[in-house]
Length: 385
Ligand code: COS
Image 1 (cartoon, rainbow, N blue to C red):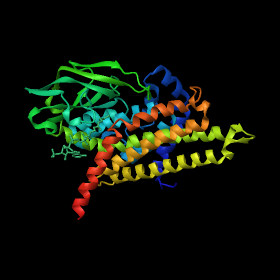
Image 2: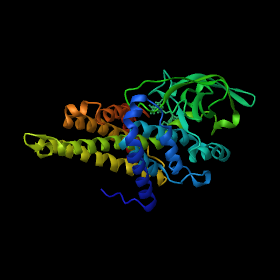
Image 3: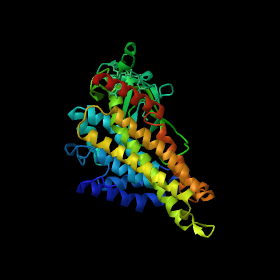
Image 4: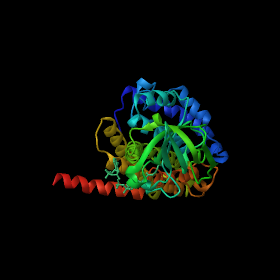
């Protein structure tokens, strides 16, 4: 399929592909085993200016958007889903500032992120606030020139590794989700510490930790937008970044198809490579078709966002839903084609299968995506008729 990339987009794709093939693929299995954060790769990405792809040139970024981010995430993910999410969680942490930051906040925080000097993270989830993001309990109480934060965030990607955190906390309990506010926090501040690194099924080299706030003093100038805007900031951020999860899923699926096809062409059974058999051919055909459909949906959504469309919650949720379900299906079938080989850790497929699962869960489970799609569908149909 030709997506008519411009020269800059072709360059981004080729650069990300080269790094994925030459640097990431070689260490993916080792990083999975050691669960070591991929700092070397992040430094390489920074050295070729890929860390600030979606940040405006005014703040030292490349000036691209979600589409460019998706191109890079997809390529990295073809080689390793864990590396890809460490890269894209940086965007997730940056987007509240990109969308709602004041100029001084953007200058101070986006510039080092764009240069790859600092890494960002997004902290919304809590032990009792996963799908129900409106029920967070972390509190931010005003006190002079500061807010005092108390509470714990759970399962924060890039937690402990990142320097800059966009954190959501309640400033007015009586207003429900409308009482939430968003803040920018820095690693190292008094009263801000981290829990242990979680052990995960997949994306193992990425860091997932608790963030613990104990009377953490946050300067008032680090409030994003206004008090009470936190939930909207979180929702708008997720609308923007869900296509990047779709791109991660797409990359995992494409990587799995690449492996299965390579194997099937050389695996001889009953006197033929197994690509000779229609049962295998049909599985390969379905995998390729689903991947291309997911890519078309994801790229169209990313372009819709970058073109400045106002309303894209539905399309964003659709991309994430369809691409992540595709990744799960394709990695399952890729293992089936490779049989026992696919199941063995000697081959990269079992890791891709483990990495795929999280894409159906984070940045909103696929059940939440279906809720978002259905509600938007109903809302839009009421507007039309
Ligand atoms: N953009 C802008 N505003 C939005 C919005 C969006 N995408 N989604 C909701 N809002 C607004 C609503 O319009 C409503 O505004 P008012 O207070 O003015 O009426 C407010 O936010 C509350 O919306 P709603 O009542 O729909 O919120 P719910 O508590 O029912 O939650 C879901 C809605 C389930 C969609 C939300 O909690 C969600 O996305 N959950 C998943 C969270 C998630 O992705 N977690 C992963 C964290 S990052 S790994």
